[in-house]
Length: 68
Image (cartoon, rainbow, N blue to C red; front, side, top):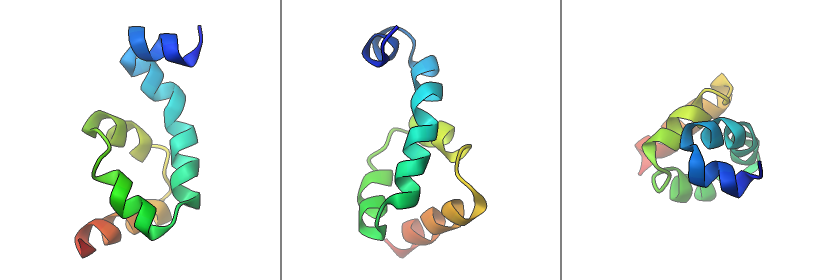
């Protein structure tokens, strides 16, 4: 099954599939990108991605959210 089909048929499985990749993107993102994108990200997506972030990245997101 391709990613699009998974997205359309099983959101939980799709989230589990894409979360590690998104966590890597966050690690490489600028602070501005994170501030802009994290608040626009649906809560269920945030929750699954959060599990794949290390403590440093979680602290970075918290700091950026609190700075807004």
